[in-house]
Image 1 (cartoon, one colour):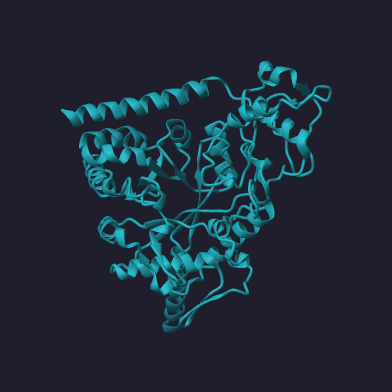
Image 2: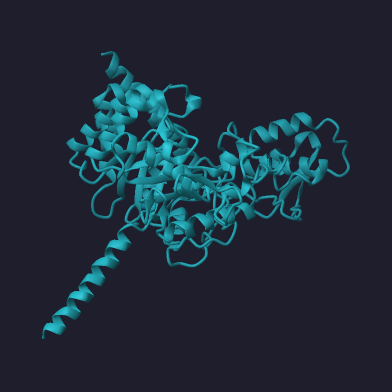
Length: 482
């Protein structure tokens, strides 16, 4: 009998040990941005998430179409508040109450949306903002927390502040510290996060380190081993991700929060639009990252403790994003704009390789190209108009369409505009320089796209969302001046 009890105790201990190991496994999620010229139906996107067993998604705003599509899906959601709204929320509790009521409470409950986090701003301390949003963050958080408490949801909807990795700095990970001008506010924010059971959210981009620094060792950006390992005392770093992560761990430790849970809010690799932005590199980085994280090895400063969650950036390409940071900005997706996997990728979620979106409705298979019989010497203004209203970033140096020749460039620009205009017959005129063809003009890796057939109602909804946003801003301003 005693031996039976011992066996049972050993089995129970093994089960408990296994459970404890599972608890430190990272959850793999994605960022779902909607700045696209060719939008998939939100229901199609949610089906894509479910097909691939992706159970966590991060939105950059409280888009009602996306949130309604997520109802009943069981997918955990982080909703973002744009930086531009922080000033209003920092000064108006009424505005916070209204936002929480409309964008959180309205979606919760049985059969609703599983909202877990509200992101207060997005990288509000980015150095390029020159402190523009810095003074608004903490007051906005306090007001929003009060609004969540009033709505009786503060126990399970947590506030976070996604920060860019430029919020901290160091030549070695162990010496990591927040930028001097952020020390005070970071102390306040981290204390708030700790008190309310929220993680620290950080965006880490080894690609940007490589893109912005010609001396950055390329192999150090990946996970396949490096000849440029960084030695930090007894610790050795073989990839930029671990080094960056531990720099944050050290910075948090200096504030007295060495055990603060960390979520990676954005991490990824673009596939086009610049040197080193290609399918091969993106696959190597993303698969390497996932393999690295799911092994639960952690980092030198947090052995055996990987990030709490990781949100890949991004789910889909966004052809309408600003290219101010670089022409690669529109190509971060692991799926192209139409929900087709760009490269084989195993997310480690027990579902094998990525599965494509189903039932995508395309426009007819036709393209707009440069006329073979016309003089194209005066095409420059037409190219400028086309590329200002569509995405031509693959034509840039390092892009997949960079080598298709002058006439190919013109055709690509014409077609991009034609598809963005839903193949309107007048959009392929260009003063007689464009013609419609039914033969796919794609060349090698350079894909001439065909747009998605979406109804005009989506445009009406988008316009309605913009109207609602500005109504809220004007209403809050009126309350403020009163």
